[in-house]
Image (tube, helix red, strand yellow):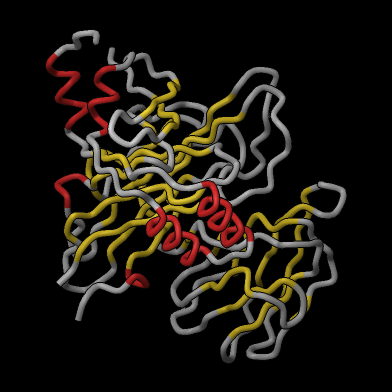
Length: 91
Length: 244
């Protein structure tokens, strides 16, 4: 893990971010179908109910990665959720 | 009485660009909501108010050829007015002025499914990233809206914002560093900075609460691949928290 400046770490952690957990393929398809039908509230509720509820501190992932303003893939070390985030860039 | 879901409202920002040169973001615009449901098939558009109302509603969308088209519907109170033009998608619905008491319902076809409602004291509804196209290289664009707690007295505790669905996986979100901010970017291709996350991550509102009347700016990042395929998609976000 690369060591980052304390002020950069503090800036990242000034905003709380937590992993929402994995979502099964079946539930994701249901959410997308609801969204396509215009049932936005039900889509949101289904997504929330379907998440495994990981809760891992996502800022740990950001702080451990490159702070280059670019898009990076991630995998949550706690629940295995995979996705993408755009890293901050500090002058 | 607790805060209800209906009291957590998404409003647009003052800067809602429809090209890559206009300012993006800024202060909250309480007359606008970035909220409507897309057409499921080519259709005419109909509109009806809930009482005496002679305002116009301008429909902006794409016709069956993909070209931008507009149609002005003049409301006839609680009697439905049906447009003549067929749209493939709607981009924007603008009443000629806000009204203190009237609600306008816009439907897909005559008496069809509701696609948007323009509520009292509000003027328009639209999608985001209007007229944004892919390019020879990957391109990112940034637009902003606000989540507002409109309850008169109660604070939303443990407040978080999350992207809850994004079927096309083109969107990431970030929150402004402070509530009720007015931050903007020079144009929508200029990043406001910060961390953008996908639908797997919930972001805490600064200080963790959204007090009565407070709003939190929510930036959206749209990432299009080089020569990306055309998109006609919807995404949705959610403000959640606890309430007494």
